[in-house]
Every structure is written in C-alpha cells, then in structure tokens.
Image (cartoon, rainbow, N blue to C red; front, side, top):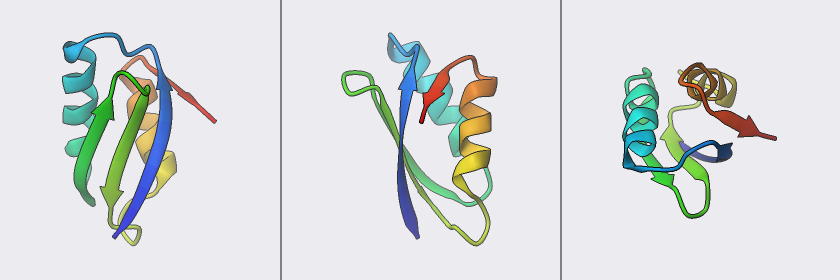
Length: 69
C-alpha cells in the first residue's frame, strides 16, 4: 500500500468532503480516503499496482475541485 497527499482547492463544507470521499473511494485500488477541509488536503491509501495519483487527481478535478501541484 502507498499513501499520497494531494492539496485541493475549492473545498468548503462537509458536502465537498463527502463528494470527494465518495468519488475517490469508488476507484478500484483505494483502501481509504481522508479529507481535511482545514488543511485543504486529501489523503489516499491505495494499491499502486492498480491505481496511481494521476487517476485520483483526474477524479477530484472531475468533481469540480482544483488539485494544486
């Protein structure tokens, strides 16, 4: 397993948090998702043989949020 932390702009409420958790959590290879509105971060534990950070970034951006490099 691997942990990645992404800085995400545009999250402001629990709805945002739940939306990202659901979208990322539904990806094959994701073990857990943590969202911090205060820190503006999304932490994902994933199986790197199945999924990579690019797909997670694309999923978050598809939901309408900006992933900061």
